[in-house]
Length: 484
Image 1 (cartoon, one colour):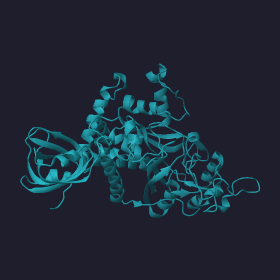
Image 2 (cartoon, one colour):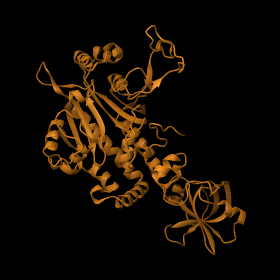
Image 3 (cartoon, one colour):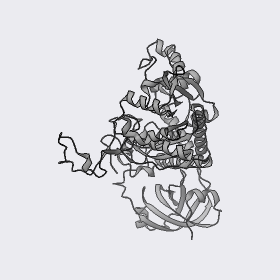
Image 4 (cartoon, rainbow, N blue to C red):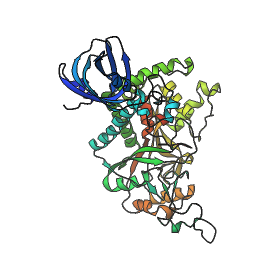
């Protein structure tokens, strides 16, 4: 008899047919007349109930059917007599693939804290919350590839090992085969990386953008979607040391085109999740509502999870310059009453509290901020012109701001003028010779182009309503955390 995933069984199977279901026991309940077992195989948030008459199963078999045990059940699909499910399986045969000692199995049918579940990340996908998150994560990843494929983009695999630092942050993980205790040294006493595997110092990438630009200036429209790494010693709920980045890059696009692409892209992938993950999102929406009840009134979110997602896809994103945003913030009630933790003035990098004020309080819509001060942005962003010959103090950057999370996308039109790019590199202390290959695209057939970066886990965090980014990636990597 063929085995059907529970998701498919609940949708297509006919009452009266014989079926085989396989999965892990969520709960077992015994009454005087029957044994009720809730089985889940990970294909859906919904369990299927399997029922055996009292005395039908040997006592030694019943003892092994505990929470966490893995079973195969064959039986007839019948209309359920109880509340909570329309159909159930009347057992005719049971195979126990693997028992789970109830005295040792850490996932019992009760509420576990997220902190505890992070300690057993190898088992947490078996919980309702994390199975829902991982199914939504899959749907969003599929939607990302589908969106770009449908819109004529080419998927470009950029290097994970690199000799460049796209962000200029310097917080990178080194890649080396040199002896850690006795590395070869130069005459000056420094580590001699010429004897290393690649013949030079190399690191794990922080971004695929620079290589992505090379692809866009040949193929027109590309996107990257791969792992990136930052050795930032941060333990906040918004930072990971290993995460996935989505970075489209488009030749001939300007800042306006870039904003249009970002808005359409993020709306489309969220809409896909709403259409294809309805049960999982409904579960997480209810979970978040229960969580909100435990918070102080002033800390509670005005929008539920599903409302927040609809909020994004239903509203046109407000677009304004950084300068205009600072003026709004400086004149806001929180600023005048000293309620912002960080002061606002022109030239500072806006904090999450400022970004969320603009989205949640002032405009009550998603916001795209543009034209940031050059001093707080990367070297590759195109300078705004103060005059026909003089560069201004702002760059053609853009950040997309969402409710509850602040910045979710950052991007810009790239500097396509060779001389201006070299001057900017000198200004921020980057040796042009180190990026000769990047500059070649400005030497030979340069073209206007633009792109942006979206941290995939930030997107999953927003769509699932979770509060900690370590809960939306299967195996989080953070300072002092590299288990599993």
